Length: 491
Image 1 (cartoon, rainbow, N blue to C red):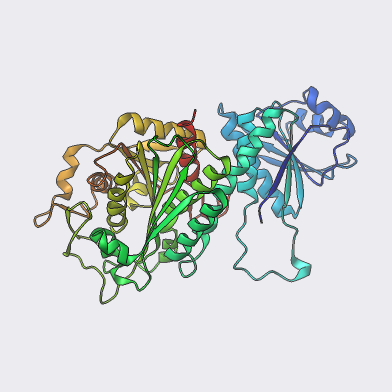
Image 2: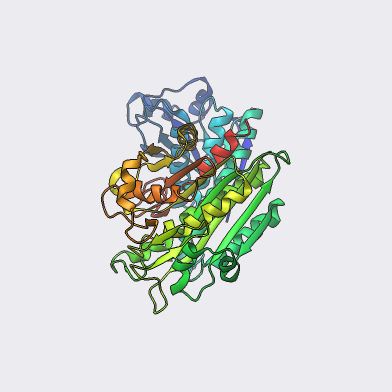
């Protein structure tokens, strides 16, 4: 169920809400705007702040049972001392919405002083993120144990800028929600065909065109790199192309590419059993492309965008590709398979080569590609590498605006020695040293005809622990980065 979001002028004299969420900075005081609320509450807000019972620290929350007529509860949420007010508001809104869900509140009102258009957008994104909950595969609890679900949120701000900000925030939030839902679905439900059907639904909603290539079509395209990963599964692999054409007819499109491994067992180079269930998230790059295209369509961005997804499952079987095999990609390059668990780059190789036919102005791919990236950057930053320094910086700036920070890694030619093959043009793994970099250098071999950036989202696309703002599971990364990059190209 989507969260219904609206904007209303902040009139504390007549406010009626089950829960009022107040986002406050560190060491906040009762300003002129909050005076009316404080007077109705008998001065409790001012006393709470003056006694420093609530100091506004990052993620600090204080729940007050309200004596204000019409306002049943007040939740104070701290934004801390951060200079990035947009990011702080996004986080505070997510915390507020998530806490409302835990309290069993159907509707909340959210207020922060001096809300700008950009801040209103971030607030809407945060509220949707915090309210999101995956329940569709769970049996509902007995009626007496159920809590109400947060269904509606009202942002208290009376400016046209806030209205516009919330409207765009809804579009971004819905893109995140779509990506998170796809990520949360298990591999027996979210199959390559399911992703293709999702792309068709997006295309129908937003007037896009969609093309889906199956195994037979990819064989005709000689996509031996992609298809070798799909050798071990009876499921039909899919190359999904979704086109948004609202820019000038002759304008080169932006290409968004996503890895869509609906489950990754590692193949013959099989993964350890412990934690393998998390490998349903190996399609988060594809989910990010679909979520971004959903947002781009909702915002009707005046730009040309082509989303490309390579989707299959990586399974061991009697027909699976083996270490030592050599395959040929669609651009003619021969690849030695060293490790069948380095399969994402094999899929993306042919997808990136295929993207060249659209003559893109830039291509950004996203993939849960390497465990090495998690070792290098943890779960805080996405690894960012590319063939064009200006484009890399453009992507880093977009990621920062989206609240999905990235960090650049070098693609020096010296590292290419690690993926030289004795029997083929290149091998698909250079071993543990510089694993994130060598994986990106492998991809670069198939993205030579256009400016290209690679996002390794292995550490940021999903979380194995509760982050406070969101529960365990998919984060929605890289939807925000994709959207901000494309939106930046329209300004």
